[in-house]
Amino acid sequence: MPQITPIRPAYAATFRCIGSDCEDTCCQGWSVPIDRAAYENYQSLPPSPLQTLIDASILLVPETVKPAAFAIIRMNEANQCPLLSANRLCSIQTEFGESFLSHACTTYPRVIHAIGSIKETALTLSCPEAARLVLLNPDLPALDSQQTAQAEPLVGMDASKSVSWQLIWFWPIRQVVLLLLRNRAYPLWQRLFLLGVFCRRLDAIASGELKRSVPDFLKDFAASVATGALTSAMETLPLDREAQLDVVLQLAGMLLHRSNLRPRFLACVQAFTAGIGNVPGANLQSLAEHYAVAHDRYYAPFLDRHPYILENFLTNTVLRCRFPFGSVSQQKPLSMAREFALLTAQFALMKGLLIGVAGFHREAFAAEHVVHTVQAASKHFEHHPEFLNLAHELLVESRMDGARGLAILLRNTEPKAPRPASTEIHTPAPQAKAAAASPNP
Image (cartoon, rainbow, N blue to C red):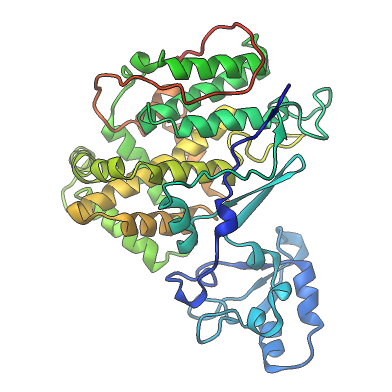
């Protein structure tokens, strides 16, 4: 197969920490892990007031409960790193240089994955500056033209071994995903629904239920999207604002008693609840009515003017979570349908919060409110090890993990006349004929 130049957004390379100007320092509000190499460096420091402070602030993690971190920094009474100086800079970096920082402190907010021989970097949006860089850039998916990838099995991956066969086709699959997310011939909720179809079909190929080759399927799926053949069927999908809001409320309520609540996140929750009319005597029906008004009058007009914001959020989430592959290993079976459900849960939560916040600010709803909401929510949910599993359990228990339920979480607009689709999606694949994809689950 020919070489392709995969879509590999390079925005993470442009990130620069703004230090003491940051409105929500990463040195506050959570545990800071210390790897063994950094810990040993600190033990070798000569005696000094800073060395004494470091020694008093770092706790070894007991071997019996040890996670990935070798040690952690004990937060002070203000729940911030005691090594943060008066001008809100890291004393270790100031005194000894970046090489003395732990791996977590050096890389944050970058999330780095190795795909074959290529490293790919996304950003965690719990950092305010990272959230601004990602969300507010109309040209976010600039390509990294320095590397190409084969549309053939990744280096070191052999289909005859136990490695998931989907991962062998990482780059062609990734290409379809990112191009689909930016195809504005479809409203965003329809792009995401099509992405769910895509994931379920790949799972069906993996199980043998669908007798297709991956290259043939990718080619025909792209052709179906380009012709708009699925638009009419998607317009029949359900619109159920009450059911959607019910799940959003449950997702937003997760971890409230399991993690430290920061003032920025509390302000976000308060704006959200006020924006959907959460007053004494309110019920789900009245909340859903306010939720619909907030969406139609304030959220949707703003996002229509700035369509790239949620596209960028999704693009970054795809890279950060290695969607639709997740943390797949040679020992763990891959379910792309489950990865799509997790993506939908994250998107539905963030969209729902933004709708409520838009309802609170009304005509004044602006980019700064989007950044604040996404950043505060990301810091609360994104780094919690239980959130994604809990979110998936919620979808399963509420029977929202199937195609119909996920469509309810995605759709907020009334049916309207379909728009013509474009030919923006092209996927490298050999010439072959096969049945087109269907939106049916």
